[in-house]
Length: 564
Length: 43
Image (cartoon, rainbow over all chains, first blue to last red):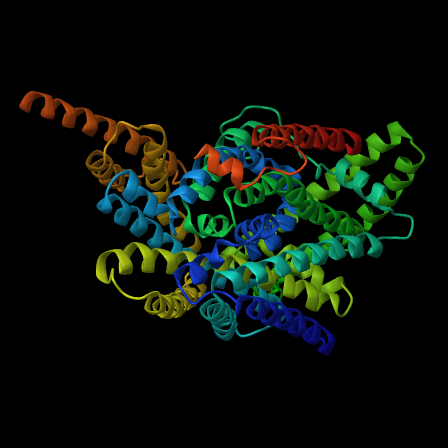
């Protein structure tokens, strides 16, 4: 990276963090100040905070890469989000606000009993702590591969920066930094898209670029066909996405903590509802940047594989040289055909557009075939090779083609996105540890000042723990999947407990506690015997909690009646 | 609780929260419609 990029990167990070700390200094030195920003944040803070929490670095690295390889159909994944926001605004927020809870699980004690609260809090803490470690390490791995930084120190420095500003500033600092982070992230992505179009040949405007992307099948934003095997279509987005987002925003403390910091029910509601309106356009825009990068690479020869560290391991082999030679020949042919296609589009020559589109698609298929050959070669040379380069596509484009200064800004975008979600995770881990465990079970009568300082030290403790996990995650590639599996063990059960709390008013605490435990045991057993793909464990856990709780509640009632 | 919410704040642009929820649903429908037009136009 050039000196200018370093200056842009460090100034962007420095200004945002110091601004956040400066704004956060006015927070009261008590639990409400540290964990919920005194419950005084306006709606736009709530909105940008929940957006920053959900959009991690991988979102900004992976989404453009996904549009490049698979088109923009991923946007449908978010169709259920506005509906989930409405349900949370109607049901969850008024209750949480009325009870003045710090954590979502605190509500469960009032609705059920202490043991249910502690159980769900534990079920949240385990996967959240591990996944936060992965949140630190995943972008670090990509940044270090592309920029040649030291992975060990990248993890430590990014993790410690966030830990320190969370520790000293608390929730208010997190909220103010996330506000700035989202502005910089969106401006950075807009500039990346603009520059991408600007780098195209002179005769290509945005409209022409999108038309070429459309002809290549990259603007496949809607798929109306109902197909359970197709991960992204309108129906899976609306139905599956609704439950997923309901579970995430309603029961995950990293999101609940953000909207509980709203100054009133109205401000929290408005923040979530505006997120519901703006999230899909934002995701569409990020994906469109990937489609633009795809068109750029129709005029500029892309690497056969975007992770240059993995590629370097096979570059010297004779097989690779042959593949690269064939790739160069295909690209030469394609360049001429694409230029003709653009001319045909501009002159509105439909039959020629059709014929040339088929030619380009055929040549792209041949390139995809060569990419597969390279991946096979990598696996042959090293069975543990990481053959998925989707996350490297966008950053590889940024570092190779964007002008000096913008590279620094885009690296800042990735780091800021990572820091935003990390900060919310640290805050949620601290909230559950201090409120649900320390204050409730260990030391209930201490002063607010004591809890404030204990919260600070807890944040430091979680920060260090997550950095350690990040170092292991970097060494064991499959840990990312392991964390997802671990999450699917628990999140379904937690959602089930909350659904029972809200919609099954007659079910009592004992029934839901044992129902949740039994459901959890079944979920782990289902995973053990490989009953189904792990994503379905969420649904199984949720349904089983409702079922078992209802049965236990019924048995309990009968017992009471027979005794009477 | 209703009283508390009403006193708390009313949504901007519209008179009731119910209308704002309807606005969110309408915005979702409009967004999907715009995506449909976008996809059709450029494909």
